[in-house]
Image 1: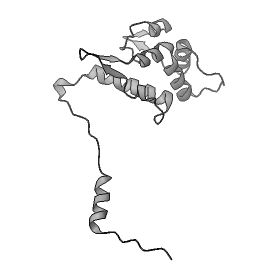
Image 2 (image 1 turned 30 degrees about the vertical axis):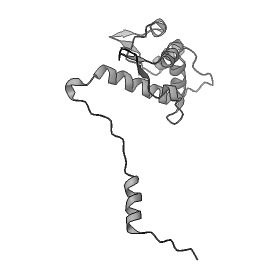
Image 3 (image 1 turned 120 degrees about the vertical axis):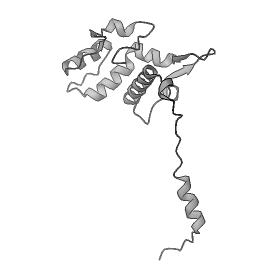
Image 4 (image 1 turned 180 degrees about the vertical axis):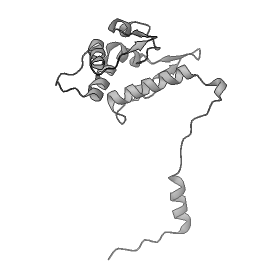
Length: 146
């Protein structure tokens, strides 16, 4: 026989209320919305989540941006380093493409070639993106494959 647990109606209501707490981001008016920043933010966040797994993203990569002393927004240096080294692209590409070969993707060129074999071409303003483009500093965030 199970022991009896007495729960008052007020207690049950408080428990139910605590489960419905959501954090809602500030909503900007259409006039003040930065579409380019939003696209870059979504692309980087998606890429990092795919590369590390959405539950295993390192804390320093959780938000890919930081603000400097002049309130200018920049991509965090660890994110820039990972993009330049191709580590994020290789990790995410290996997981997404799940190639039949046992070889992991190594380097920008390997990722570009693997995508091309699947019929996906990385472009920037109608021009194919090369390994050289992806290694350039400062990073060109306009590429369709950020």
